[in-house]
Length: 394
Ligand SMILES: Cc1cc2nc3c(=O)[nH]c(=O)nc-3n(C[C@H](O)[C@H](O)[C@H](O)COP(=O)(O)O)c2cc1C
Image (cartoon, rainbow, N blue to C red; front, top):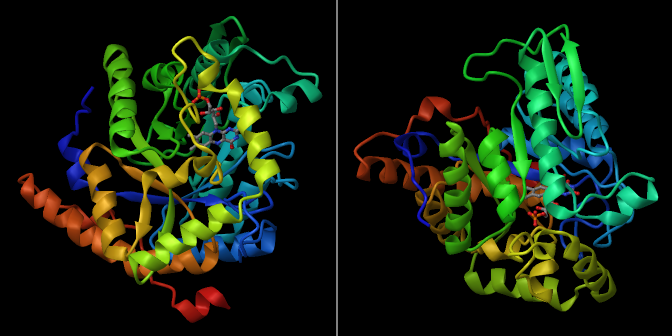
């Protein structure tokens, strides 16, 4: 299937996000040296660097138990609130599992976070794959496609409560009646309510995202794989009369030469924490590969791919700044609106991305827009004063 790329994609600058390292061990399951810390002080500094480097969003992970070596974790929504308080422009997206939260409680949290942060709080609704987290909490663990049925209802209730004055829904998993949450979210031009992201790759995930998500997030994918995901979500969205936007994950290794970047990748993989990667490979069998069509996140991932636990190597953002910018543009041409990035040494590399890669991306985006008979709307670019290498390393 081929995705449809609307004109607005060419006119709108690509948005940038980074994964908040709120779990220990960084973004790779490897014993390679990583100058990334998972504690709040580091993350506060990182968030400020990111918003000064052209990043518009950060995504906080939801993890309650060790997996992929992340044996210490900070809770996503609390951590996000802290980061919102420490920044001025960055939007922070908190991952949230239906099944762990009631959508009404989340709606209330989100409205309060929206008011506190001046409209910068968002959520990423994730259906989950780590069975032990649910089972050990004594919560029901639903079969794969049922998790998406619950997620769809969860988002319908969440959106209803954010926007309606007398909301009721009598569903399989949630029954709410006559609720009017007050206050409502802030009224901000360009959005109907705080943004609702959705993460997943399987067929059920794509269909659900098309029906209810504002933003569809995919794990790392090659061009062909990602085009298939976008087309799958678009088919479902078209039936529902909706128009979601598209995010993609990728792990960035930008170095002066391609050789250096590839050597870093080789070292990450050579130093993989083998038992942790193998344990993770077992746990992810609960994801899309457990379904009839066997498609979904990690279904076709090798040991090497799983060393970056969001399949970020598959996106191949590895090389010189120019090569990475070219690759990013290839994804823009098949519909990416937002790039979610991970790094080995977050603080330094987020700053370096903003300094070395982003200006090239912007130039190429302007060329691409002109080639499609339009202009890149630079008024939509986030304010980014820039961060020097010395400041980032300090
Ligand atoms: C960008 C993104 C972020 C995600 N964040 C989390 C998370 O924080 N916690 C979690 O348990 N799962 C997370 N997931 C995983 C999804 O919830 C889901 O379990 C996964 O996509 C596997 O299911 P699938 O094969 O149906 O896609 C994330 C997925 C994506 C694409």
